[in-house]
Image (cartoon, rainbow, N blue to C red; front, side, top):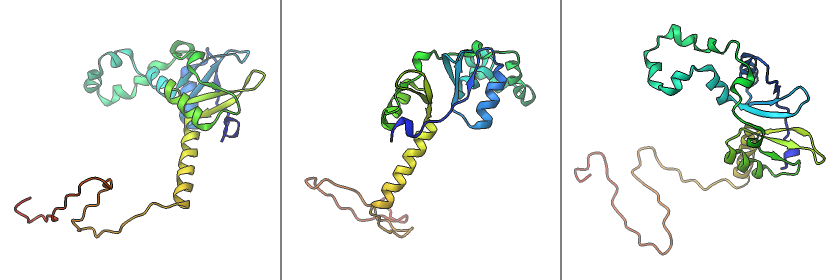
Length: 193
């Protein structure tokens, strides 16, 4: 599987967009974040959903997390109102160098490694001659992994042993050249237990 096979369109925010509109876009569409570009489409950076959560919190909560315990629910529900008037550019923490960039022939495992190493929930897929084709998200890769694992299990199911629910039997894998120690099973009434 290559990047071009699993490419998606990730919405783009402009630096002067209101942060609340970015939060709504990410939450309503279940996105891992947003790409931030200027009016000409040039990449400025990206924002993850965690960056947007950070924008919703007053800085003093991050400086002293114990403060959240002294706030009542009415005030806690109003915390996000502090985002009003904040622009995307005000909370943009990732520059373009942090976002993994790959060509359309990049393998899925390469994408996964880049995302994990850079702690970025998506990678940009670039055209051979320049320009961005789209993105591959971590959610999309996780879906591919789950599908591949299900297919592998269906082709070659793991060996299983049925054991009664109240059985004291324990099964352990032991290397062929290891000494094996056998013990008698114990029961809840066993005084030597």
